[in-house]
Length: 297
Image (cartoon, rainbow, N blue to C red; front, side, top):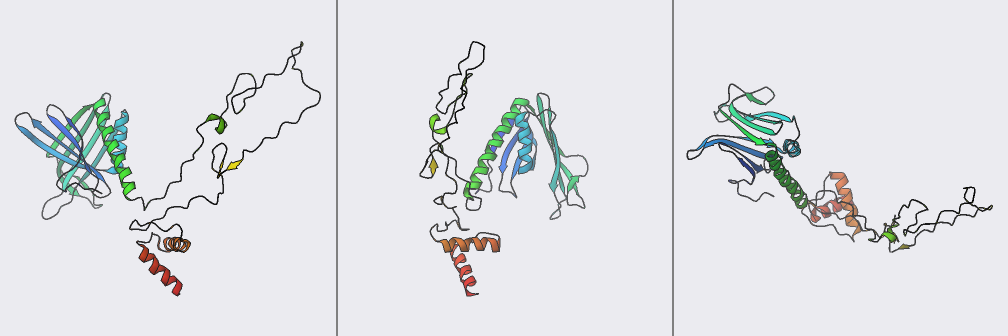
């Protein structure tokens, strides 16, 4: 799914001040998906003085950037992560703090010596060696968050399209007539009873005493006529229920090959395979092998 070289990253947004910067970069191919925050201090004509980075889990990133996009007042977030000791190198602690205060937003990244706890977490072990605090105006933070959320949403859609043979098939849309008359849309006049085509009945005649003139014998109301059904749909465009000609659900093998819609034996065996194995058959040949095993019993 991720086609860019391993030595590069997609940069989603950059915020640069007179002496600080913060880049939000994609790392969605890491684990279950992450975003990389890369911040630093610099001085014009002298270059970067210090930098620090932090990997943010995608579920946390959704909540954080949604709060920033809405400008949620009083929002605060803090987390501690790090790298465990390996190859003779000590543990490294990384901390991220985010705070919304009025019209300002502060994002702080720290890194320094860490300590591995009994639970496997990394906590700070002494003062931070590098600390970068980047400030935003509220609108700047909202603009950054909107860009990040738009990218995450597009990535979600692309991920579902690539793996569409693994996800549930959505139901079709309900298609109705484009005209108000066919849909039975009615108006609601102040006086009179509304009709499907928008016409109204006149109010009853009023006698001199102010009471409506009525007949002594009541007339039965006309029976409502059910609109005829045509080609599986009623006149108002609603789909006919329990239609035997409704299309079958599309099924796919693990390699993306579709299951034959006309072969009932293949579809039945496919369903039995999923029920027995808890997964879709990886290929048509695998399903055939499963079918032969079942029929040989």
